Length: 226
Image (cartoon, rainbow, N blue to C red; front, side):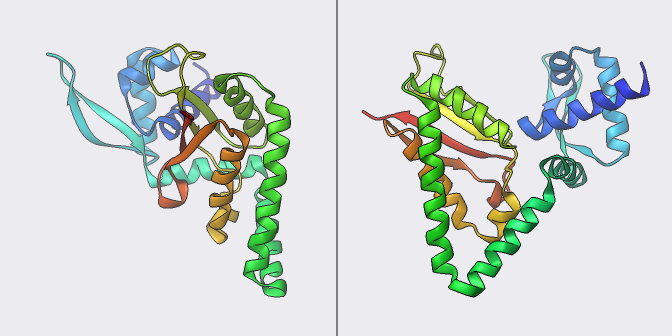
């Protein structure tokens, strides 16, 4: 295996743990389609670099216990830096600086009002582009639009029904493209929730997870209205 392939596999492991919070070596080997022996070598290297850690073990049937791996703080920081570089962190810094200047000039209440107007315009743009399909079809399009904007978005049905038959979904964003702005102006997250509700007027939208609260993703429960 080449060094480039090894680096790619290790990056895949880190990104999978970022997305799913935790995993066993067997699960990682299965998902990444490499042997358990190879995955354990990668995990050992990542552990030596202090990018991952294991906190508990589980008994796999009658076999030996398995470690449950998750990202360490250093691993999260590395991924955050990599993703920030790809998204252009300087743009986020500029946005924060601009909003700070506006708040000093016109007051924080006026900035909140401006942001509200921006999210209303964004909601209308999304609604125009989502069209009139089923909830699942519109969520799939919303995921596509958000991914194009730098959000690590996905969705899935909440129950075991077929995708197009379900009326309850979880919409998730594992990486927030505006997290640095949201840290300085957390009201943005409230506007974002309102935006998703406006984009899907035949649904109720409730926040289930929040990156700002230290969780590894932002999550929303989307349900068809009765």
